[in-house]
Amino acid sequence: MRAIIFDLDGVLVSTDHFHDDAWRALARRLKISFDETACRRLRGVSQMAALELVLEQSPRRYTAAEKEALAAEKNTAYRAHIAGMTPADVADSTRTTLRSLKRRGLLLAVGSSSKNARFILEQTALTSYFDAIVDGNEITRSKPDPEVFLKAAAKLDVSPAEALVVEDAAAGIRAARSGGFQSAALGPDAAEEGLASHQIQNLADLLALV
Ligand code: BG6
Ligand code: MG
Image (tube, rainbow, N blue to C red; front, side, top):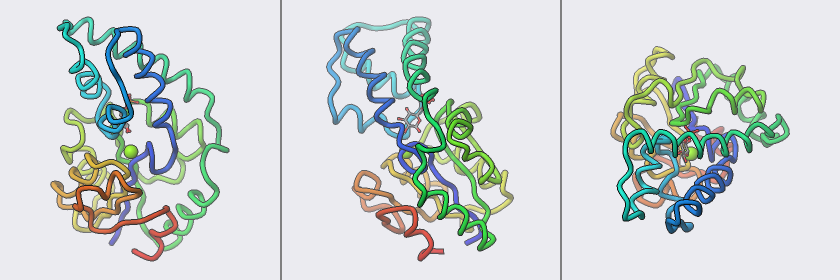
């Protein structure tokens, strides 16, 4: 193993509740039902793909321009939440683990579907830990497509077989698998389909895997 590619939301930071709040507010305004199951389906998928999943519950059809405006509305609400993030929003054990992995000579990358990934990494002072970052602005296909992880591996100059993907979402584990990566499922959602190479309970468990 030469490299580790981390998902961001739900793995390095906890921003999912901010996504949920922002989508819930939009769904409420549009009078669309939106519950916990709906929240979980949006994990790991891109902003526009997530919007399509939210709008599935609506009898109304939206034009491409309307969808752009709805995605922007959600993103504004989401960014208002993440603008308040600070380095204190990253667990000490996360920083310690990243440092230990680097000391062992592993290359580290972020592979996130989020267009806001770089903003979150800056807010939380995580950027400097990573040798490569691929975010939602650099991909055309959302997880479960492996594009984001393949691009991260290419930036690190390693093959998929030499990299471990760490994910909290089922879509991310599927993406890792179809790209030829080993994967570590963090938490129950990622482990649910039984497709991950490893299951971990917290990031420090990675130290025993690599
Ligand atoms: C992923 C989240 O990291 O990013 C998804 O798990 C989210 O829930 C996706 O839809 C896109 O994020 P953004 O910041 O581009 O809206
Ligand atoms: Mg995630």
